[in-house]
Length: 78
Image (cartoon, rainbow, N blue to C red):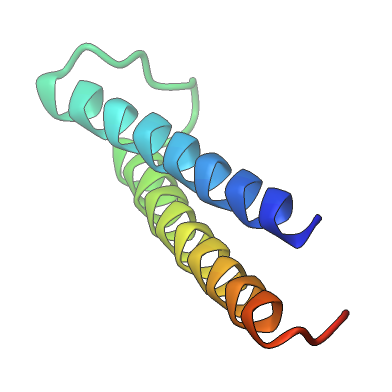
């Protein structure tokens, strides 16, 4: 069960990172429609933070997966 959680965390983080980076590329190319009343800097900051969060989620997923593998290897139960 912990393995599935780790996998979902890694995949979710990758999707979040990819979505944020795609939007940042569109902002840089000038093809992204900015919301009314919000500056381009605020939108860019939001997506930069979103991509960092995606990387943190991937890292946590890897850590959870390694922890589950070690616990499985040594036979300790959760």
